[in-house]
Image (cartoon, rainbow, N blue to C red; front, side, top):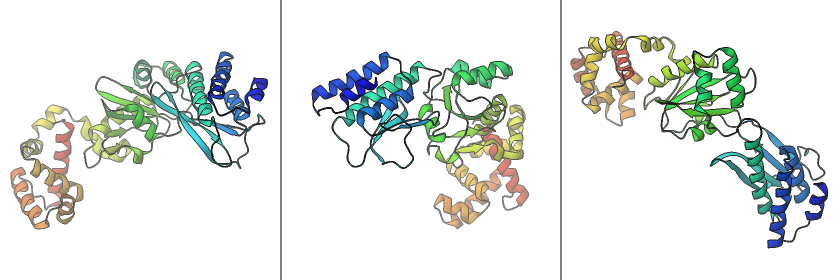
Length: 344
């Protein structure tokens, strides 16, 4: 392999040179080399530092032309390319040169990216975000014992004893994109179940969720319990608060345990369900319950505070609740939340 790299290290920028690049990587793949060998061979061929990074594991390889790991003080990447596997971006490859890229750098990176994807697919657990739903269900199922759960986590590519945080999102979303955003550079897996999407991750950044995505985040504890908490938190999400961590709910989480028939029979919840026939009234009440202030509610609704005050007076009469009283405001907040939990 080193002899082949030496023969091809000074390629002419023409079609023949590109063909030789293809032959170079074909030879490497026939020999079933690993990622360090790919990075090392590429650095020798390109005569500069070559790098490989995998998003899911956070692993980064940087090799110098002499075959050793590159020193930290190196030139910035002069050219880079995404690694894709099953139409998902799983990492990046690059070359570090002083100055602009040279002839055939693009061809080298193109073949390197293909070779890395092949190696990733061939060895160990797949590094794409989307996972086998059966394995994910083993992880979150209350019927799974510790041995089965740990084996499933290993097959999914999670390190031993890593804290697993579970995220619940509505089904139908591009889970691979959401997972890559909220857990960059760390192990993350996703699967779509019958009614909800699930993401397993070693860490979650709530600020990185796309604006149009609702999500419930469970604690980093037993995956089964974390899954239950994540689904509960998802039920509490609204357009005003699209992402909720279960730990933020506190005592509010108890509302999710109230039997549906009891919630439906509650006089305040019944009143809210009737109020919901008018979307403007519902939005006004929601803004007021969220802020506790007429002026702040008016600001969020882009209305004059006097208009909001008049509407709240009418809403209070419809609900038979004094919204200016702290106890009345608490009743309205609880009733609005309980009504939402019914999914109506």
